[in-house]
Length: 115
Ligand code: AMP
Image (cartoon, rainbow, N blue to C red; front, side, top):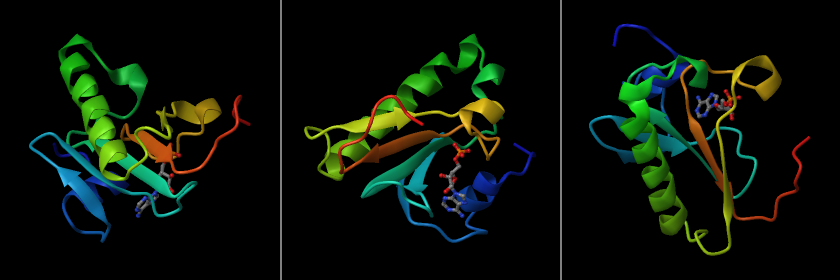
């Protein structure tokens, strides 16, 4: 875990943020530029740059990230009204931080398809 990203700095409390969840392998915090009333990023503590870098050994981790997202949705009271889970990948996907993260976005009605 030597590689540094913006999110490792949040993980290590070098940059302040509103952390809403943490365990041994995953943490989550509110997005600094929220796109909806709930906008939380669920992030593995280990640096995995993009979805393209995932392998079979990380399948459980990815599943547990979804369970953290489910928990956050429930805690923020949007589980029943609905929410969106997004993981942007590379340039066309709009990824800007190369440390995978699951966006949990909800609290308003969203359009589909995305722009
Ligand atoms: P992506 O564009 O999918 O890579 O998402 C990166 C997200 O990180 C964006 O939604 C940013 O608003 C968010 N972000 C950037 N800097 C911070 C920060 N210091 N604290 C919380 N969220 C951040």
